[in-house]
Length: 527
Image (cartoon, rainbow, N blue to C red; front, side):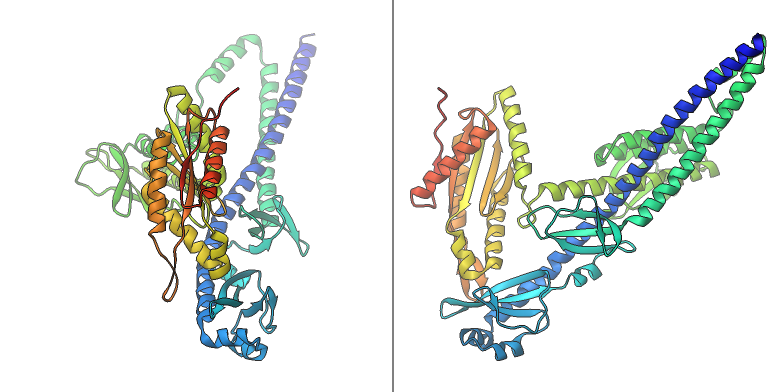
């Protein structure tokens, strides 16, 4: 009877353990897969940022080359006379000429990345110079991982794509197509996932078998003998050794809980290093400048130094000051080295997270906030202002006759005008204000703690500075542009959407009044 009861208990324990082990195995294998994909996406984000920089550098050189050719008298004469043979002679590698949107030279191969400049003769546009940049050139300048590729896509890859029978993990830029896409082979990622999942399953199986064996042993013991065993199980694990290692693991868990906030990571890293190594103090230094410190820093014996690579342009170092009156023991050095490695990975992930957020919230051309970032900030600021009774103003700006600038001087000059206006806005606003490029030639400025009159004064200052600022469009050629402004304020307008509508309506009235004007919106009447 007693043996049968013990068998039932053992069977119940084993079944419960099998269910728990199965659930744990499923959860852990999914976590392993998610973790590997996150690591792959972080690498792709860093590679994509490098590719964007390469496109910017090569594009600037191609645009400058197109402008130089557009200014050449021989090119202007050949385009004016539609002399295709002469243009073929003038066209270098990657250069084509267009008239009315049609190519008139066929020798150069068209590449997906193209930059152009208008050719003006006798005050009229006679054609365009188009300089192509091969995607292979961008790829060669970008630090891609093994088997990595770049491509331009008009579609949106959904995580993975298949090209020539090979599957890739994909990450693309925001904005209108074509979009720059960076690819990493999916097979090595899946192989790493499979290997880690195999190890997890082996560990879960070993734990399950060990648990069943222990349960069988418990079931065979008499009740009196079971008491000291339960007391032993109730004791804290690892009491007799490994205290520093357990402490280090706990502190690293705290560092992971700090997430991608660099400001939260630094004190956790330093406090952890002091706690687990017995150092009297710790410092984090980058380019000779101290970023953070913890504990007591004494001048005397040289510190223990570890190089960190946070992923930014600067190299950081972790400096641990020796304990007072003694040196670090071997265990402390090993744990410090282990902790420094984890700290380096955490800082690199934080940096990549910041880069990804910046790419998602910043306009690439002007480096101002983009529309999504501005809308989110406006909603949050209106909620805050409503709670504390503060005013908020919004300035809406739109460049006058901007299409004529593009049509007459080319999009490269148009881009320069947009960048110049962005610089004027950036130099005129406060640190708490948020300037943004809302789309095309339209800009916005969010002014916390400012009423409509304060917004009008800023808009008038921007209008005056822009109309008096010449923009260089080539040798001896300057462009002068103006802008119209609409201003609206909270609480006169009761919501973020109402603020934008009132600002837009005021802008339309400024345009209708002859442009180069500032108009303050009328408060919306609620019926």
